[in-house]
Amino acid sequence: MIKLSSRLSAVFDQVAAARNGIGPGRVLDVGSDHGLLAVSCLENEIANEAICTEIHQGPADHSKEALAEAGFEDVSNVFVTDGLDGIPLKKGDIVVIAGMGGLNIIDIVSRCMKNETPDILKDVRFVIQPQKSVNLVRKFFAENGFVFEDESVCTDRDFFYNVMRMRFTGTPYELGAYKECYGVLLPGKEAEGDPLVKSYFAHLDEVFEIRSRSDMVVRQALEERKQNEDK
Ligand SMILES: C[S@@+](CC[C@H](N)C(=O)[O-])C[C@H]1O[C@@H](n2cnc3c(N)ncnc32)[C@H](O)[C@@H]1O
Image: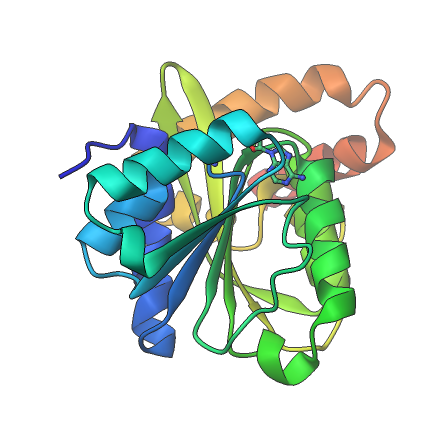
């Protein structure tokens, strides 16, 4: 069995949770790099087929080798493409986009949405782990009609990472500054005393204090947070 880093384990856990909601299907790992997540999903029967996509040939070859070595050549495919270009989605698919910048993720999902019908999108789950621009990613998904089924936080080599599990409903909505910056579900987890979310928010408070000097959305979010604490 492949051993995943704590960041990829957190991604894997959200894929497993997404699978419970939609029955059997494929996992599509966009930017699969070494193919570890795809192998792990097949090993643990979280997916009956794995599709890996890679923008570069080298990592695509690594993914292909890892899948073949683990004995999954017949139930996997690796494509060199940008995001999901040329890969039609199917009901029951779980799309994973992990370890990439938020703007790249937004670009990939925007293009995917143009190519898919709402009917298909409603039966697909998206597991998203942005390396940066997390607030923009949350805003994008809300404004494009996705609900947050879950969001988790993990640490890996002293960095915090967020993993979001998203479901398309087709009804867009506004999050507002606070939820864009602190998340839709994480404040509830903080209120319940989740130690990891508490330390993540303490870290965010510090980062946002500096960023609020030049970023109005962050400034609004911090003000709202302080108002909530005073209540
Ligand atoms: C930092 S690695 C993360 C790999 C893996 N998803 C993870 O979370 O560990 C990002 C990978 O995404 C690939 N990538 C970046 N942009 C991409 C795009 N638009 N479409 C497909 N792959 C992309 C890169 O080549 C690289 O292998």
